[in-house]
Length: 146
Length: 146
Image (cartoon, rainbow over all chains, first blue to last red; front, side, top):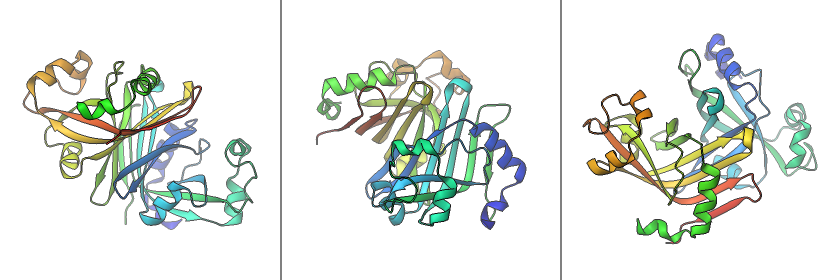
């Protein structure tokens, strides 16, 4: 987690505020021949520390693409409220049973009916490297310090 | 335009219907070290033939990235109405003066104050190769036939 501490806390708080209630983002991965995107639920993380977590199915396209190339992008669009957020991130697959239980919420049963202990379920952790946000009082463009 | 004729007309009509009134999408490009995304206006194209057009500034990051690698992704999110669309596309820069005038709309002056004849303004044409949509009565996953 140390790497995310290099964003300024104020910046992360500003992102968390704009991200509030945005349950669904577009998760984009690099593939052999282009970019693949799909909507993913992140349960409207209110306490944002630079990491975004998604549940996914082991062996699914998104998991395989991240295993091959960990660079991803997250796109949040809420045009009706004038909020747009683009996050560049490095993703990793996390198979830790405690992490899965901690981050589970019951709406996920729509996609993962057997719950967080199902061996077919893994977590994707996307660690932001750059965050841009448009709309609101000011635009935001912050990078993680290396 | 012939390449876009290989989607079934019914499929394109279904996409156009879901895309209606979604003025802003996230346009993602491949960069040397990852993916870059930014919200772009496409003026809620109602007549969708597989091509999406964006105005951009000559020499801007998005234009340079497309010149280097034309594979892009478009992400539409309207969670409040249960609509999510992901389009894989091949993009090209179009500098045709007539195309720019035909596609100009006045709200664009917010970003391009000198209008469509400004030599700093170019068009990005993103030609869909695969369209996926979630929500609504049915999910959609259609590819352009080669």
